[in-house]
Amino acid sequence: EGEQKAKVTADPWIIVSDGKKANLFVGKRHTVVLETGRATSRIESIDVGVSLEIIPRIVNDGEIELTLSPKISHFVGERSGLFSVKRSDLSTTIYVKDGQTIMISGITVKEESDSYQGIPILGQIPLLRYLFGGKTKSGGERELMIFITTEIL
Image (cartoon, rainbow, N blue to C red):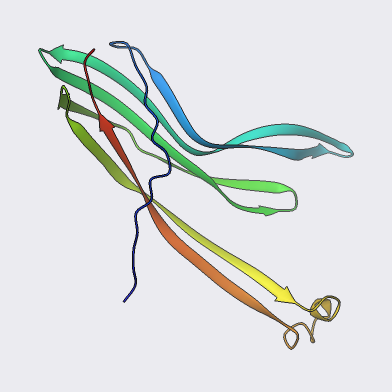
């Protein structure tokens, strides 16, 4: 029987004006070198993590319309100097009462990776690599859950 645990990775808060858009990002900015042609390259930044765009609007006494757009992105691999980033987007509009906490879920990230470990030099020889090394597959699944508590100031 396996044990599953939940992990809180961030606890940010933000104040947003009525009808205005706010953006929140939790993650990392990676700098990569992209080859653009013969002997030329450029440096580019790629944000990887969770971002949330939120637009609150007070509609009735104590009721708030929330337009939410969470996005999650992560690296899925690199081949020949090209990086692959997978994105999952969700968008919804909900109505909540002042002080109410809501939960958004449904964005699942599946990760799979292959790795090879072997003895240096012997692991690079085509027929011997299977005798002196091994390939390992690993993977997992994570579900993003976002909790939002509204408060009219």
